[in-house]
Image 1 (cartoon, rainbow, N blue to C red):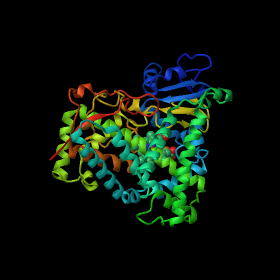
Image 2: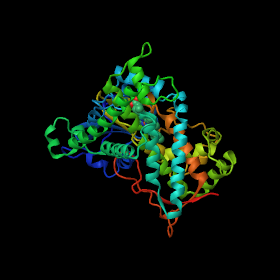
Image 3: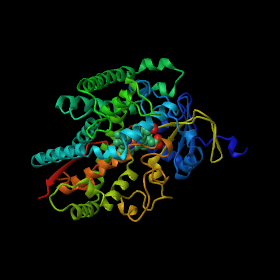
Image 4: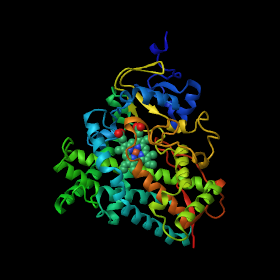
Length: 474
Ligand code: HEM
């Protein structure tokens, strides 16, 4: 048989569940171990769903260079379907006209360079709030940095999307809780997604009612924010103070020629998409960045020196300063290489039959791309498991989807459209956190004691919160 007639290799499977049990406990690690035995292009059966696993840069290169469109759909999964107004968000809508329109809208109007710059005052004020919270806390003992960072990233996203008025503590708290509950739902096991023909399996799960409860809370909240905007008067989209709700409502009322006018459910789905896509990813990045810096004091020292030499002692590091900090940028890349917040990216689905590196892949195959394994592949990286930001100095390697060995933001047409937004926040936060404080482990513990385990599920968050002592730098 020629390769084009055969399916990719596959491990032995169990009746009924297929290979589902092989994903435990941590899917990207388990899939990596399997790929070492069965190869970088593997076909698993997860319940009833044929799922292609890509684990090498060359497989991702072939996918993107030769079949980008064919790999550009997303599976119709339960949580996004029910949470995002029937998958009316960008992240989970299937490849087609609706996705193209919303993607264009987000790239042109919500996440453009100009727009990301216009949100600078929000980043500045949220950063000042985070620094003073840490400062106030620093005398009374160790601080739960995970929690502090979570508030920081969620507040930025809330203010950018919903507007400055969302500042009341109770509103923020409700939104923080709901967003983190929604993020947890994405990692929950949904029988529907793996056994679509066995609807009765749902009887044994409480997932539907959990989704309905969170949806009700989030929808109620976003609807009231939209109504408030309509009552107060929607800002025009070229207004620098416009938030994302303003921009979407102004596009709805007055779409530029050739662009589409989103319905109210579509506006709400896009808003919710921005809130969920932007918060946990940036939060996870910052948690791992601080963990790695604690574990690698030489890197921390070198980074502090760079930040002080550019920004000067004692003052706030500005976003302009950050652009003159190559070592900081290298540290950020190294964190994303070892700890990609979405280690399996977001699932894809093929839209037609394809031949990939000689293997036959039918239409409607689900696809998982193991960015975590690719970032640690010893064929591409020297001392792949070590945290060495220096590898990115004097190197053109970047995360914009051209270098297939480094794909924390994905590749091709479905690559993350929020890269600029994310990088502006995370580099700025790291620079200031290391500039204003000396960070240490709680009394009696050393860096070696820091637990670096990952939590279960699909996102790559820390298993345990990061608790550190902050000493203010004079
Ligand atoms: C460190 C932060 C972030 C990381 C690591 C990240 C990573 C990703 C990844 C891996 C994907 C899937 C790409 C693929 O399928 O190839 C994605 C998609 C997406 N991201 Fe991000 N992201 C981050 C921050 C953000 C932010 C701040 C926003 C917006 C405010 C955002 C909005 C989106 C959207 C809308 C999609 C869906 C794109 C589509 O399906 O066409 N992301 N992101």
